[in-house]
Each structure stands twice: as C-alpha cells, then as structure tokens.
Length: 363
Length: 230
Image (cartoon, rainbow over all chains, first blue to last red; front, side, top):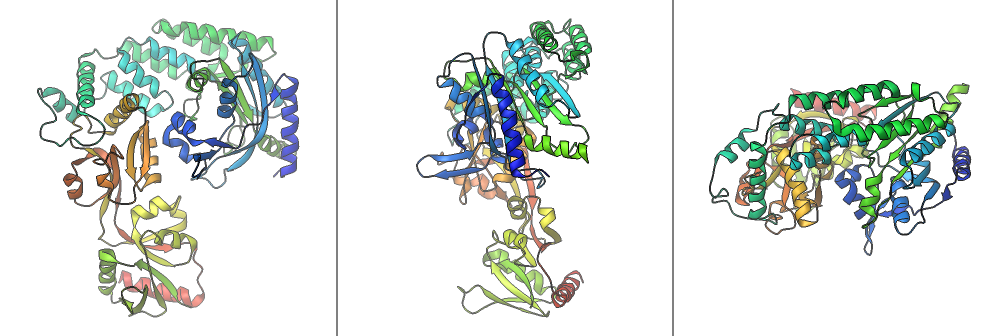
C-alpha cells in the first residue's frame, strides 16, 4: 500500500500536468453548506457524506467531491472560458464496506467553455487518458444526453416525459415508470377504484397536514388524464430498449444508434454531437475505433452528468472504484447559476489507486 | 467474572422479558428501589443482569460490553450497520411485535403505493418549495428503503416521540414509525402504504459477536443457552 507522502507527491505531479494544460489552481473549502447538497441529491447524500453542524451555520458537510464547490465558485463570477485544477481530500461516509476508503485524495480538471463542447469533451478525456498512460485499464464511455433526447422525443405526454426525466439516474424506477406508461404493468387496484369514482372523493376523512385538498384533486385529475392518454407504443419501447442495450465500440455503437434513430429520430442531434466528439478525440490521438461505448453508462453513479461520461477501471481489481471518472454537467451550472449557465465538463483521478496498481504491476 | 445479560430497564418490554426467562426456569429481578437499575439472576450460575434502555442495547452488544441482550429487531437494524457481523440473532421472543411502516394522511386518497408517493413528492416540492417531510427516528432504515424503491424528493425530519402527531402539527407531511395494531395511526387520521412495510420487528435475544469470554464465562453462556433452548 502506498503511504501518505507518496500519494501526495503523485497528486502534486498529476496536478502539475493539469496546470500545464491550462488549469488554474483552485482550493475550495472542506466544509460545504449541507443545503445545496441536499437540494441536489436529496437524502441519499446523507449515506455518502459526513454531516456536522454548528448553531450559526446549521448543517455542514465534509466535501464528498470537488465539482460542486468549483461550479459554485465559477458561477459567482469566474472569467470565461475557464480551466481549473485542484488536488485535495474528499470524504465519503461508508456504511456497508469497511474496505472502501472514507477519506482520499482527488486530483481534478474542469473546463467551463461555451465555444465547442465536442472539443472540450475531447480535451478533458485526452488529458485523463495521457495521465493514466501505462496502466492496464478498461475505459468506459457513454452519453446521457442521447438517453435524455430519446425521452424528450417519445410520442407521449409532457407529464410522463417529466417523470421519466426525473428518474434517468434511478434505472429501476425509470423502468417501472416506462412499463406503466407502455401499459405493460396493470394499474394497481387502488388506482382503478379511485378513477372509477366521481364526485367529492375525500369523503369523511379529516384534512390534516400541509398538503391540501386542492393538491389532491389536481393529482387525481392528472391521473385521469394519464389513464386516458394512449400508451407508449411497442414500436417506441422496442427502440428505447435497443438504445439502452447498446454496448459496442464507438463506430459500431454509432451505426446501431443510427438504425435506432429511424424509430427515435429525436436522438439524431445527440448522435451528431457524439460524432463530433469522436472526431475531436481522434484528432487528439485517441484510438476511437477501439474505444467502448455503453448507452446506459453513468446512470447509477449518483452524479449530475447529463452528456458525455467516462470512467477508467482496473480490470484485474474489480473491487476497486474507478481510478478516474468524469463527464459533462451543463445542467448543474444552470441549477447553481441563479439565472446563468455555461457548458462544463471535467473529471477526477485518484492518485492512491494509481500507485496501488503500479505497485501490483511491479510485483 | 460473569457473562452480562442486557435487558430493557422498564415497562412492558421488561416485564415480558422477565416472564419469557421465568418460563425457562430463569428468574430475573430488579433489586433495590424502582429507581436503581440493578438486578439479579436466579436459576443459572455466572450470569449478571444489566438493565438498560432498549435503545442502548444494540450499541452495548456491538461494543462487547454485554454478551447477551434483549431488544427489538428494528433497533438492531437501525443502529448497527452490517449488524450480522456484530451480533447473532439467537431467539425471536414472540412479543414486542411491531412493524416499521410508512404512513400518510387518510385523506390522501391518491396515495396508496410507493409509486404514488414518489409522484406526489415531486409535485409537493414544486408547489411548496421544499421536499416532502417524513417524521421518523429510523433514519437509516427509511433512507435505504426509499433509495431502494427509487423514491426521491423527500426529507427525513427527526422525531423521537409522538411521531403520529407531527402531520397534524405540520412539522411533517407523513411518518415512518413502528406500529403493532395500527390504532394510534387511525386515531391520528393516518393510513399505511400498501407496499410501505419496511421491517417486521419483535423482541429478540441477541448474542454479541465481539464480547470477550473467559473459559468460565463460555461455560456459563453454554449452560444458559442450553436452558433457554430446552
């Protein structure tokens, strides 16, 4: 196992290379307002971040990653375009696996640039690729933007699309909703009964709590409209399922998705973006023809990525978390930007894992 | 030295625990005044009684400060992550039965399932500008249950007692709590979600996997367990 000073030395080297690439060094605080994190992730963040508090500032969290504070900092008045790099500790609460580190160093690089997103994606990916050269790693890439475009393009109601959009990062609930909207699962008896009754529905039950009768009536009306709306066609479902299952090298994946786009034409602009990115990566010396692409990649990692996503994995150590990972998070800048937004992409590397793998390769 | 048996220090849970051991030929008793948490064990050698709050027993077992303990499944699962590695479940005791459930106001006629709850939580947040609040003291169990079910846009607010009243007081929109008959829920105009059963709990005898034992203590433990299982 590498010791602390070895890890810090490697972190410094990694950060230096990001500086050479144009990253301005930033050093956000360790403590972050819990409100922002809770707003973004909900209660799930409590399983992942350490919480502390004082009487004046209320709940604070030990930073579980850098992206959020870097975005906040940039949105408060960073110049454009901007490239940042950082190196420091992050903290992850562990409740199930004692072997997973609860404190480790991350070195990252983030690009805020509205000029050419494909070029920015390629720049970030190529930099990480270079930093990890010499290690035997499996590289995974994907693009959440294609899936989002597919949902947007479904021939169904706005309410259903919003529900699906909300659960893109929770694949199981997403699947359940999809099956419901396609009429594949039967409506629960309770809902059938509710929709078959008319007149004042709440009856004799006492109205308590902050959720009002008006809100309940509104939901019942939404459910009625949903029950009357046609189901998502089998045709579209089959195309969506084929899309979710795409797992190929980039050129073959592109070919498959162009076939799928015959039934889901809404994904075409997203495929054009993928093609532009692949070209930009190729220009930077990445062997795109042998690069893997998974349409579902990046959906389960509790992240905010909404476009290009990537991860580098130690194939011989499946027990380890990714050595590096990253992606595009345009929507996050919108959420934290209070009216402004900027396309952004970035990633992080773990120097401790690099050293561990190098040590194993030598042994 | 003797092995230490941790038992709830008051109320029905204590009485029922005493009865359960009495049926197996072991007499537990509180010594001295009602305020003093000391006790005695008759009918088996080498066992000390430690009276504790039921909520503290999981922690004492995990720390190895008691060898055996009586407390609810709910408390062990809530307070001890990876509980299987810290304690062993010896005997379900057949009392203190309670279900950890999710309950919403009865007049929410549009909410019967977790799927409904998730949709309502999203709408609630849009309307009120904050996440739908669930009052509970079982933070970890409820969070894991809801994550697993893919429910989002809720917020857990801490409630250590009179949880059923929080909805009426508008400090929460719904609750997650234990119930045995559902009477208190009904009296507070609440109903259980059809797929909202998180855990079935009952009073259980647990053995600490970390408490150290001398040879004599091991023998005492063995005798005690043989007598219980007989």
